[in-house]
Length: 366
Ligand SMILES: [Zn+2]
Image (cartoon, rainbow, N blue to C red; front, side):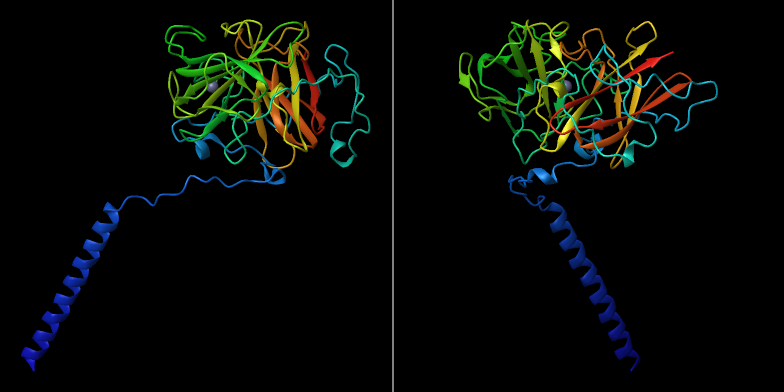
């Protein structure tokens, strides 16, 4: 009986050992198994489901480029701060009083589009096809330094995996296709890596040629001199040149296609917003009219707060029509409470984002 018990115990222990061994083997096998291959067939998301709250944070898009961590300004003005900037709206340089801050969210949208604002020039479609990340990253937007980590950005970034197709955004001629190893387009040779530069053929801006630049490509499929139309695949997302992880660096250049210091403009004002979405542009100046750099701008509307910064660099040229010093693109239509803060001062204004248009707000720091 004892022997039987002993035998039984031994057998049980043996079974446990065997089971553990099998589990270990199973674990080892599964650990050696390659990750399941997910077919590269992106989900085609219909327009109404495109991002309606906020663009994802960079951590959701790319692990090695941490998001900027703007410090949300205080919700109430600090002691000594003036409670409100001059509430200005309308065409840049010709401010008019609009809206009633604090009550705007309950009022209907403005009835008239005839607001005296400059005409928009949304000439471009998306450089990334629908189904991939076809909206601009907001943590390192045009003119931003991503919280002081990088040089002032002269373009905008679309974060996508390597090999994601990159497409023409307008009817254009391929002006340059290849590398910037011998021809300089940025702060240094080999800055954009593999790149394509298109010269827009449908239109000029005040007589100046308009170009778009696609940087850090893994592959270049276009050839210089080629004629392209919107949607034509001209390359693929990569991380060549000076890049942290794969993404498309997209620039709009006016006049001189080689000058990153004088030619770039903010893509937010050139890429057509999603249907039902609009763009906010604005300016933050001191009482002498001088633009204030790197001022935090917080937008509170539907969803999470959104953060922008006024342009940091002399190479961040305001748009020829708007004269802005910050933008935020692809905003769902509606009212937003926009707060700027600098030093001990914080000012808030309400602005209505109209679909398919750029709305304007201006802050004058006293
Ligand atoms: Zn970039």
